[in-house]
Length: 268
Ligand code: AMP
Image (cartoon, rainbow, N blue to C red; front, side, top):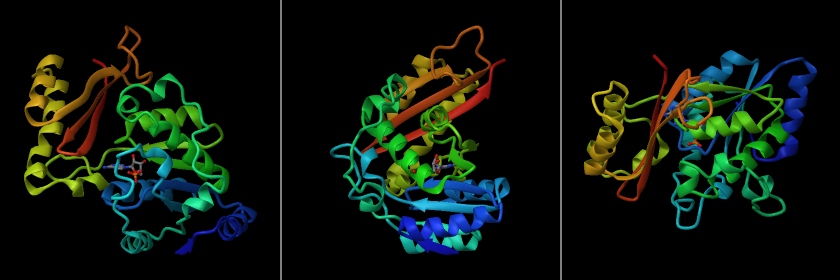
């Protein structure tokens, strides 16, 4: 596996692949890799000839007081995991390489970036769209793979990335159902036990064992509830007669850790 931290070196390898008509699949990550990320890599390797994975903790998507400084940075371990999966190339740029003119918030995401996670994290989707756009410009992949775990992010990326085919990968979970996340390591042993209640409640809601107010109330017994909503999965707006796919989307705080999860399923 080749590892690059400069654009010039990366692009000369990519150009070499392109000259041989080899297609490129790309998986953007912030590192702290776990089996969820690795499932994206596996999907990417099935979708193209070559796989590029980026590891970049993007300052533009963290708000003030959020965990940019504390975010797990485990580069060596991450690279060995990617090597085992026979990833062709890892891109590990510095902040200056990605933002030579400084981290700015020049991208306009609009209303869709201000609802749900965007309410609590107003800069988040602007920062995500900005970094993904920059990485797409540098790498120019045919395909990119994103996790359904970050469903609103996936939805927004699909809207904003013309020219790159966006594939989605299902949520990879721990044995007890908790969605894998780099941030799960922030949880204390006791919080880790409580965290399973999130998935349990979403499943009860999906099976109509609880209605929405009861599900919210149940979550509030364990967490500080950010949001729990049931929406049209294709539009992220209210369910209508035309809704074919439903999204149960949730975010909670457990102590200072923010957890998100969702269930997407067909109507009827
Ligand atoms: P991150 O490093 O957290 O920015 O995530 C990088 C990519 O991995 C995003 O597309 C996430 O949606 C995806 N991802 C994170 N956790 C999981 C998971 N448990 N299952 C599947 N994909 C995931």
